Image 1: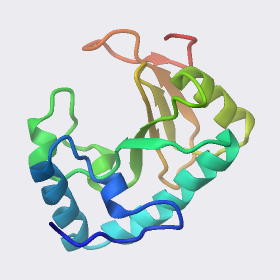
Image 2 (image 1 turned 180 degrees about the vertical axis):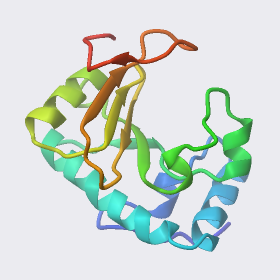
Image 3 (image 1 turned 60 degrees about the vertical axis):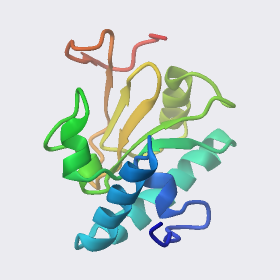
Image 4 (image 1 turned 90 degrees about the vertical axis):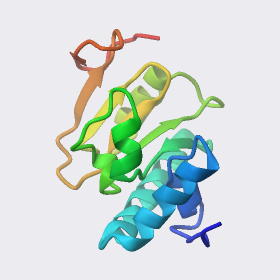
Length: 154
């Protein structure tokens, strides 16, 4: 197993590497370590993830942070230009806090700057690129385009 890397006080690389199985975890960790600039971006993203935890007052669970192109290409509904490939995005949940919609509303009330925040019903997708355009969207049905705005859809 690849040696883990501490990204911030609360998060390790293994927390960010998409890991539905040990092989994918290994591939994604190797990709992060061996691709120029990704670890430094993940450090920034992990600090921002800690800010989310402070606003919510609860720990978040990162389902997907970094993913290598080979694994990304195997996933349904994945984008070849996904921000997960560069370490700027996280998919996360916080069941102890509430639904993705409730989390999003509290992040906006807590003045958490983001580029994009998507309610994908089972989790939130947050792009933490420095653009901070504050774009929100809601997935109403798999395979369909996102609706603009954060809708109370659960």
